[in-house]
Image 1 (cartoon, rainbow, N blue to C red):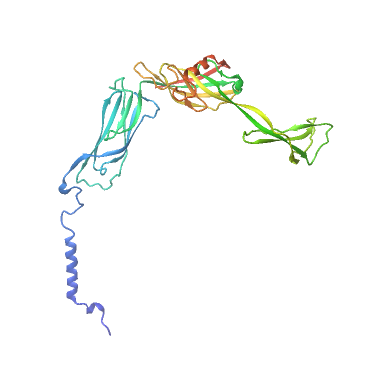
Image 2: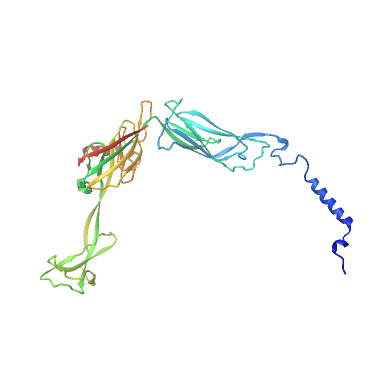
Length: 373
């Protein structure tokens, strides 16, 4: 009978193994052990971090002095969130601008930071209605390398929100009646920009009926012209017969066959393309600027709604924003853009003269006016 394995294992070997485990355990658990120090000997190191992006926003296209300015710094490099000591929004005045130069202050020490934040973002709120000269017209934000990251215009005044409903007469759909406008201000103005003459080529092709449904006392030739033309193609125009009386049917519509062997000679059809533009025109206070503009679809013979937010400067404002004229604005409905001298195909002065001399159609109806404070 064999003895168990444990009875063959020497007792002194068990003692040696137990002693080794105890020595190893005691060497790994000394008094005062804990997380390793971030900095050697508990030394604190202070300095500056940096950020990769910055944006300025007030929720409007035009930043008023009474609005709250939001300054967002993105991808801040500060070692960790435990090391971010503070952020200073330093600013200086340069010519007509406020220059904001944020500074990221860091301090690395032995604090435990169990959940560091990698490249965080942060947003500051600032009011701009106190202690700013009327000469300041712009706010900019720069990084530590003096690179411009974002800017916003600073204006002094108020915003007025107006809703206008204008009846657009069906005569506006006829280019031959242009230029045409609605009465007073605001108004809709449609002008004829240019004419492009062109020639379409076409020839007839005979159509034979394969199933008549009625015999007519008399028939007439019925030419079916296409609904659209292409200058690069010669259009084939089917010529078929129809009853002289409109109450009778000569042939089923699906039973016509075209005879390609019976073609007429090539003929020309002159035509003209009318290029037109439609504008929203309004007389505004001096140096006023359109900050927001929306409108319904243009419908001839019906009403069109316009919602316009206008910035009206006060007596402290010294600069004029972009406008068609100093006290007159025009908005191109076709391109959804404000008419300015440097960008549009028609000059500001000539458009104003056309508006003054254009034939007046039906009246204009203003329905609502609200001032934003």
